[in-house]
Image 1 (cartoon, rainbow over the protein chains, first blue to last red):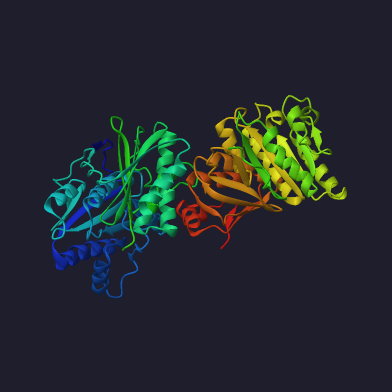
Image 2: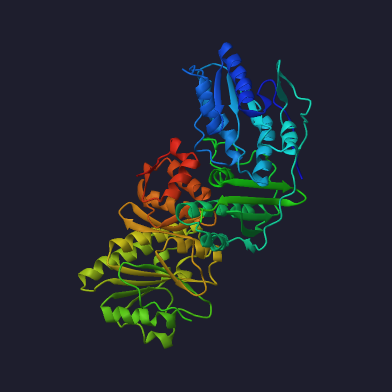
Length: 317
Length: 268
């Protein structure tokens, strides 16, 4: 399955640059040179990296220059779909200062399953689309080759138009301007519950999800948030997906998965990944779903219809 | 099984969905007999009851022909119905009755072409009226006279519903005091149009509104959009939300409404 939109926004939008490194020393060397270049050019550097990397950088940059800003990523959670709107917000907040902006964005890959890795790869691909028309800015994506398997790393390379070399940034020979090619979804975990829904069945959809989640200790506010998310997706099926759909629920590796299938097509690859515009009240449902769920997988083509999987991390037993 | 109507207390406003085979007369006998037992003034707005059931009607019950209060205009005017209930409720107290007990056969009262917004507006006004008076109000809707969607919508604006085989609407909105309304259950995309219509009717009654959400489980994006759209009406001064649970609050924030200039305030 592919996502059909292609494109790289350069040079007006984002300069999206990959930096592959191995170990802390190489991380610091590459990132430090990126920061020094930015500061020398009077640019602001926004840094969003895992906690241990941030600690390392703070030690490396004593009396940090006010042009270096560590972003608070605590509210972002694990869903990669929240990263693009976060960068958009951070950049717009700095736009008023009138200085060019650079970013350093590294994601914590520890404990990521294959579904999360696939969504992280899609996020990297989407970055090339998301900043079309935005002011020019430069994002460095450090990847530790020691923690990521080579096949995944090759796939990540194909999403970055630029790469950091010893003598500075250069066009990446690995980059391929092509529609995103999805890996197949993992099969539903057996046993799973299945329920066909149509108009008037939203309450029944919620009951099915409660029935699957409650035995695993998902209760209270987190259960209610989950019910909001499943209500949104099932409601989309009814309103835009042919009036009906099929829900499957299962639990695997400490995660509740709710899968929705319908006949509709979601043609916008950025759906739910752009902060709602104050000018329009519509189109906020998938945004809410991405904000609530720990991971959202969307696969949609005219041939197959739409499959959406919502992942909710269950409480530790 | 025929639902009983004899457990209805003073201050209740009930939606009774009547099955086609059920008819009105037999099932209302206990309701009417209770009127006599408790010393209530009974008013029936609807067709004359069949002879077999008329023996059950209290001797001093008032039978009102719907044609006498609907007027002859091209569009239905439900105002006279409200006036009748208000007038009879005021009189009932002065006449020494415990309360006014009204059964309205809506099939006869509401022309089929009446829009859902007008129905919701009417029922919310009735709810306000019942809450303010010593009254019992039963609105009987024949299932074969009103579509399922209409029944779902009107049920939303009754605190209570009776009828066979219905799971009921996902939410209910009813009076909780002057300018105040309680919303309970779940407002989702199925119920959002009815919620929007109920808010429009409530803001027409009072431009400053309080919504008590203590018993609201959740509200999805469609429900919150209905709330924002209601507040955007130029006639609305402010909608204050009280008692919202953390999920409703966090969804409101996630949707970006807490940072917008919207005349909706979520109180802590």
